Image (cartoon, rainbow, N blue to C red):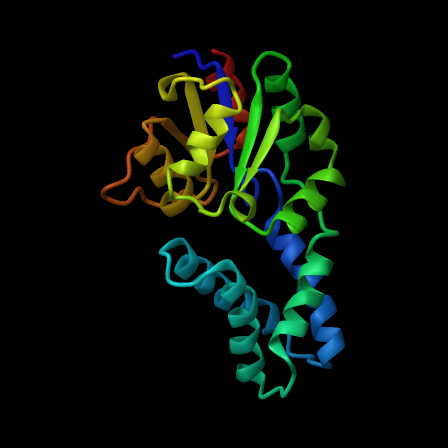
Amino acid sequence: MKYDAILIDADDTLFDFRAAERAAIGDILTLLGIQDVEAPRIYHEINRACWEAFERGELTQKELRVQRFRRFLEHYGCDRDAAQIGERYTQSLSQQSFLLPGALETVREIAQKRPVVVVTNGISSVQRSRMDASPLKQYIHSMVVSGEIGVQKPDPRMLYEALSRLGNLPAERALMVGDSLTSDVLAANRAGVDACWYNPEQKPLREGFHVRYEIRDIRALTEIALG
C-alpha cells in the first residue's frame, strides 16, 4: 500500500537514545561522585519504569523529571536535590543527538518523495535541541512533541496533531513507525493509522497490538514507505 506521509518516532527508532542517556547520566555520575559501573543500567531501569508510568497517566511529565532522580538518589543514599539533578541531566541530554545506523539515509530518501513527521514523547526543549543538532532536521516536515501538545503516545491525539499538520490527511493515508508497542503501535491502533513496528531485538508481538509491518532494520522502511 502506498502512503502519502510517514509518521515516525524519535528515540530508539531514529535517535540512539541509549547512547544519549549514557552520556548524560555519565555527567551526573561525575557530579555525584558515583563510580558504580552498574549505575547507568540502574538509572535506565528506573527511567524506563517512570516513562511507562507516564504513558499510563500515573505521572505528569514534571513529576517524571523529578521522580526518576529521587529514586536513583535514594538507591545510592545520596542527599541531593532531585529536581536540581534532574535539571542538570535534562541540559546534558539536550546536547546528545546520536543517530541509529541507517536512520539518516532512510529519512533522507523517503523525504524526497513523502513528508516525514516526527511524533515523539518527551520534553520540548530536549527533543527540539537534539533535532536542531542533527542532520535529520533538514529532511523533517514537522515535529510533534508531547511536551507541547499536553498528551503523550499512546494517546491518539498525538497522531491527530501530526495529520492536521499534513493538511488533515486521512488516517488511512499515513503510516506510523516506531519501536514501542505500548506507545507507537498502540497510538497508531487507536488513531486508525497503519503501524510499522521497528523491532531490531526481535521481541514477540504481544496480544492486543496490531501491526501491518514489522522490520528489524530501519532501512527496510524505505521500500514500505515508497512502494
